[in-house]
Amino acid sequence: MIGFIIGILLWGLIVGALARLAVPGPDPMPLWATVVLGLAGSVIGGIVVRVIFGGTGAGLVGSVLVSVALLAVYRRRVQNRPFWGPGARRPPGG
Image (cartoon, rainbow, N blue to C red; front, top):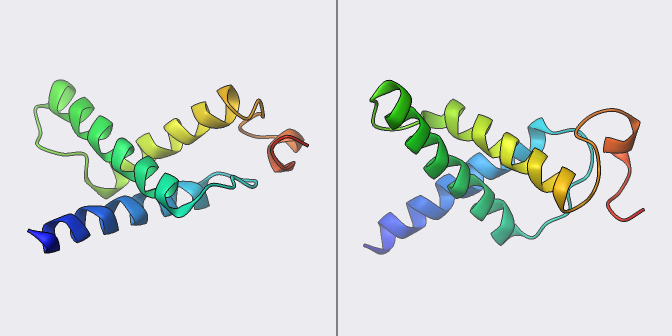
């Protein structure tokens, strides 16, 4: 049971870290927020794949793509920064 939980947390960390690497500019957030980002992208991606294609999961690529989309929404709505361009490279709040 503990191995399953560690595996889920590790999956969230990997997916969240890849999503953060894919987005240009700084996105300062703690480790737990990166894990939550990756897990949310995996769950939402899995639901989308299930509804649209009838599959059972989004896989790594689908999870990262949805996590990137969630990070873009977070950056736009919470940090009030654009997703690309010169404003994307400035630190949040600056």
